[in-house]
Amino acid sequence: MLRGNSGSGKTTVAKALQRRFGRGTLVISQDDVRRNMLWVHDEPGNAAIPLLTALVEYGHAHADVTILEGILYADRYQEVFARARELYGTGIFAYYFDLPFEETLERHQTKPNRDEFGEEAMRRWWRERDYSDILEETPIGREMKREEIVETIFRAVRKNA
Image (spheres, rainbow, N blue to C red):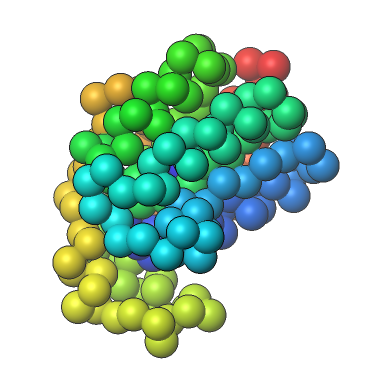
């Protein structure tokens, strides 16, 4: 599980991990489910929550590796986190991208969707250190580069397999 504020690198890392793990790796993107599939606002009780839960269940039953990534606010997505813990137990690896706002804003400027939203929206969505009480999350800071993050997660998961 990869969580953190907008522009922190979650989607980029998730895609790189999918390539690293290879075929049979399911990537579940909160943005794809919430914005593209259902087109709902990220508010408490939104319709994406049960679908994300169902996709995590599907991944557990049918994929070699399941990667859930998104902002996934700690208070709103507890149901998804709790179900993932039930399914995966100690086999769940959770990471929180803990970067300063300015860093996420800078990274956002390099993304293809940089014109879809800007600083004002990112400030509205921003949550400082939004760690989950359900997940044991490993922080990822700005000093880690994408390749290092991918390799660290890959090794941790493979070691547990």
